[in-house]
Image 1 (tube, rainbow, N blue to C red):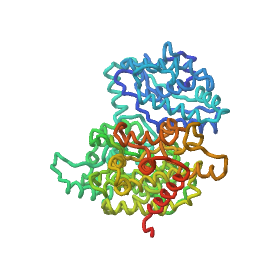
Image 2 (image 1 turned 135 degrees about the vertical axis):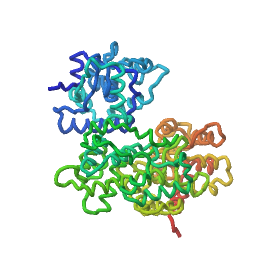
Image 3 (image 1 turned 90 degrees about the vertical axis):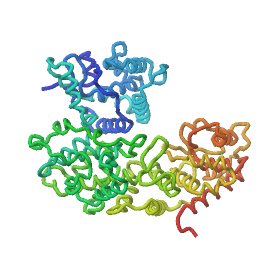
Image 4 (image 1 turned 30 degrees about the horizontal axis):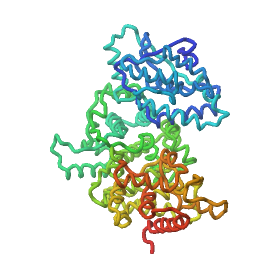
Length: 609
C-alpha cells in the first residue's frame, strides 16, 4: 500500500523535489487558493484527526516533479505564511530555506525569490523580482489566515501540517528525458491538472449512449472560458452576417444538430473505436486535442466568471425552470468546493437517480450559457470591460456595458444567479438588441432593489450597492451634471466599476485639529457625520491614504484627475461630483448634497413621476 505523505512526513524523511525545465509556471489564482483553504478549514472543523487528500504527485526516482508541481508549490507558499510563531513554527522545517524542499531547475529568479521570503517573510522581502502569481497567492493565504479566529489559528495551521496528504507515484528509472517530456505533455494536454469540473465531466458524460467524444470535446471547449466559443471562420471567408446566423443557429438548435452541422469547430471528428470503448478519468485527461489550439484567444478579454461558477449557475437555471426541486442552501450550492456533491444531489450521475435525458438537457443549457455569456455579457478587458454584442462607440452600447459591469461588481458568487437567470430567460431563440437587453436588465435591477429610506443609508450598514447605483446614475447623466466642467466630464467618461470598495467619510470621523469642520458630541452631529451625504465609496488603499484627512486634501486628490496630473480612472463619481459642486465642505453642504444624492437615486428608477 502506498504511503500517504504529509508535510510532517516530508520533514521526517528529509525529502525534496525539483521542478524540471519543461514544467509550466505557477498558475493558481486567488479563487484556487480560496477554495483550497475553505475546503481545508471545513475538514479541520468537521474531522480534525483525518487526513485531507490533495491527490497524486508523479515524480522520477531523482525527485523531479512530472505532475503535481502546482500543488507542491502551494504547500510551499502555505509554509511561507504558516511558519510564523502565531501559527506553527514546524512549517519552517518543511521549508528548510538553506536547502529548500522545492527547487527550480531552470527558474533561478523564482528560487531566489522564494528562498528570501522563506527566510525573511513577505513583509520584509527586499528583492526587485516578484513572481506575481506567487505573491497573489501569499497575500491571499495571509489575508485568509488573519481572518481565522485567534483560538483556531495554531490548531488549523497544525492540522494542515499533519493532515494535508498526497500520494507519490514514482516513474520507472529507465524513462529518458524525452520520455518524461512526452509524459508531461500528455498529462497536461488541456493545460491544467485534473480539477473537480474535469471529474464531473467524466461522471456525467460516461452515462450517455453512443459516441460521446464530440460531447467531451464540446465540454473542453466550454471550459476554456477565456477563449471565445465561436469566432468568424476567416479561412472560409465567412462574413459577419453568416457568422451571426451560425451563432443564432447554435442558440436555437439541439446538441445533435449542432454537432452534425459542425457549427462549432473541432467537436465533430470521428474518433477510433478504441477511444470510445470505455471512458475513464485518465483517458479523458490524456485527450489528444487541446481546446486552446482550436479556438481563438480573445486578446485582453477574459471571462468574469470561472467555469465552476458557470456550471453551478447553469444547474441553478435548470432547477428553477424545471421547478421540481428546492435548493436547501444557496451558500452551499454556489460554493465551488462542493461542486461534485452539489451535482450528485441535484443532477445525479450515478445510481437510480441518474437520468440520461436530464444530463443531455444540462449539456444543452451549458452550451447556450457559454454562448450568451460570450456574446451578451461583459468580459474583463485591458481597459475595463468589453461586450461582443455592441460597440463602445455608441451611447447605448456604453450604457449596456456600464449597467452589466455594475450588476457584476455589486453581486458575488452567491448572488450572481439573480441577474444571470434574468439574462438567460430573456434569450431563448433570438438575441435582443443592445437597447432591449438594457431595458430588461434595468427593469430587473429596479424591481430587485427597492429604494431604501434615506435614514437607512448610513455608515456601518452594507450600502455599497447604493453607491454603485448612484455612480451609474451620475455616469448616465454626466453630460448634464458636468456640462460646465469639461475636464470633469472627461474624467467621468473614463469611469469603470470595480468591486472591493469600502465606505469613507468625506468630512472625517475624527478630524485633525486644523480641520475646518469639527464635530460636536451630539446625536444630531453623529447622524449627520454618518449620513449618506457625507459618504463615498472608494478602494481600501485610498481609504487608508485619505483617512482622517480634511475635505481640502480629498478635493486635491480628485482635482489631480481633473487637471490630468493623475492618470487612470477615478474611484468615485460621487466624489467627483462633490468636487465639482463645492469648494468647501461643511454641515450645511452635507445636508444639501445628501438630498441631491438621494434625489438622484429616486430618479435612477424608471417611470419616476
